[in-house]
Image (cartoon, rainbow, N blue to C red; front, side, top):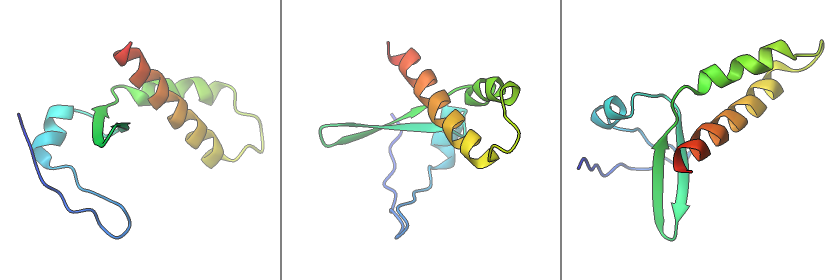
Length: 84
């Protein structure tokens, strides 16, 4: 088991230690709360899910909005498939 105590910055950010990032093999994680425990789960291949959205972009749509919606859905999709 790998453990690390990490300080939370004033902006609410934490740095995941390199050793743990190497085990996760992803740059996207999902946070889950169970009672008073925070669980961080890796999200694999979230970028592949984004390709669906590139096909259906309407002219004038803000790319920021598309990215946010796509990432939220990709993370939700990949996370819940693994835990089912």
